[in-house]
Each structure stands twice: as C-alpha cells, then as structure tokens.
Length: 333
Ligand code: CUA
Image 1 (spheres, rainbow, N blue to C red):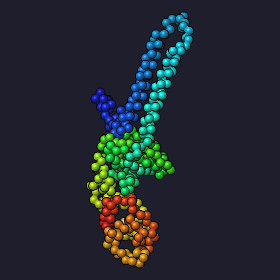
Image 2 (image 1 turned 45 degrees about the horizontal axis):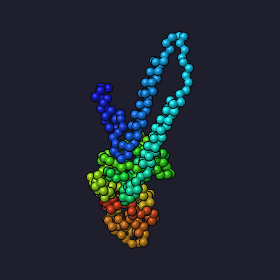
Image 3 (image 1 turned 60 degrees about the horizontal axis):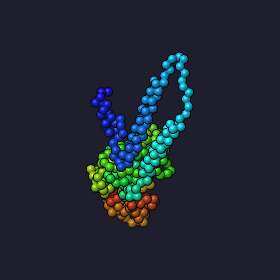
Image 4 (image 1 turned 180 degrees about the vertical axis):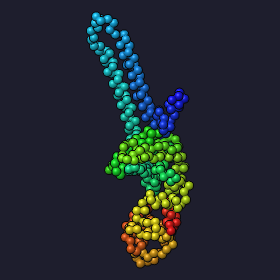
C-alpha cells in the first residue's frame, strides 16, 4: 500500500474507513471523546511503562559474572502514588462512562417514537403516532427509518423471534433487540443523509443481509413524507397501494384474482364496479365509498357468505394510504 492510499484510509470517514466513522448524532461526539481519552491514556501509559522497562533493563543489567544486586526494599511513597493516581483516573472514567450510558438510555421526554421490529432477517419500522405508516424506501424496498434532523427520536424495539442487535455506527448507538420484551434506544441526528443500520448479533443464516437505512430528512420533508402516508412521491397511487396491500397484511385474506383461493375474505380481482349481495340481503355497488367503509368499518356491510372477521384499520391507516389502496383495488382485473 502506498502512502497516499494509507493516509486516505486514515482520514476517510466512509464505511471502509480505518478510523471511526463520521459523527452524525448528538451523542456521537461524547462517545468518541470518551473513547479517544481512554485510547490516548492507554497509549501514554503503554509507551511510558515500556520506555522505563527498557531503560531499567539497560541501566541495571548484570555487568559481570560475580556482580550481585543490591537488596530491594519497599517504597511507600512510590506504592501510594501508583495506587492512588490510577484509582482516581478509574473513578473519573467510571463517572464519565456512567453519565454517557445514562444519556444513551434515557430518551428526552419530547422524543418522537418509532417502533422497531426485528425478525429473521428483516427490520421493520412503524410509526404508531403517525397513522401507523411504515418506513420503507419504496424504490429499493430497503426498510428505512425516516427521521427529521435535529429532533430526538426514541426507538421502542422488540424481536419476533431470536435476539438481534440494532446498530447505527454513524450515531454510535447499538442495542440488543429481544423477543418478549422491549428495549429502548434514542438518538438525535445532526446531519441529513442516509446512514447504515446493521444487525450486530448473529441471528442465523442471513444475518449478514439483515441491514436497513436511516434516512435523515429536513423536518419539512419528513412532514411531507408523513402526510403522503409513507410514500415517496415518485410512486403512482396504484404502485403505492400495491406496497401497502402487502405491508398492511391485506394479502393474508384477500386474493388478487377473482377466485377466492380458500381465503377468509372476498377476492378483489375485478370486484370494483360490481354489485354484491350483503349478509343482510341488501345489494351494494362496490365503489370508492364502499371500499373506504370496508377498510375503516369492515363489519358494517359484510358480503354474503363471509364472516365478519376483518379488523378495522381506523387509526392505523392515513387518508393518502386509503386513497392508494382503493386506487390499487380499482386497478385489479
Ligand atoms: Cu438479526 Cu443478526
């Protein structure tokens, strides 16, 4: 490796950097400061102790076969010094470390909350306080945690199978994600951009593919993203509806063709514009208003031959998402 390549390795902050990755959260600089302090303190003592050792080896070497060493006795002053000074440094490090740890573990009261669900081998980000939208980059299909810049974000995390670990190097946060209980971590991003999320607990065959992104947006763009129901603006309503059809779980009960396929809900292929008989005997035309009601209040008008088993999506679906889902159902032939 030549000097230029080596020095660029040392100074780069990208994912392959030799040194620490870029700092993109309010906590990152505190954590790096503690890390660097410990690193330089250790380096200082390592170099100092080794230098003394070498000096003593040379200075007090055996000069002749008959030479005897002088008797060694204790030195209280020295012993106290090398006990007390390191103790003070240790206590200082403990206090510094404990405070950083507390900072990392106690989210500010005004933090925005996002639910993180880990399963083999996928991250899922849902926004219970933003209409239940889901964070996915709709172009690349990569699970993406969308957040506003300069706002504290609290992550409420759980796993639906084994232990995973949520790690964002640029934010210096890492926390295990456990089944059957919640863990919490928080951050405040200081830079806009896209940052990597890794799973850092070995969780099975595809552990290494279990990654996601954090997309830090200016607050305005984040609000637009929320208002669009989690869309990116580049997708047509039909395409957006198609992603929602899967992410909201509609596909578990409704087939896309005109056949029932043994599913609990009515098939949706070609259903738009038809007139169906309801359980009450009433005939209803399947139009936008019927679909809207069927999603928000599924048991108001159940199609004949079906059980009233569909859960309501009221409160967990936004208006733009409803529009997109209806547009998608209309498009099904
Ligand atoms: Cu999930 Cu490793």
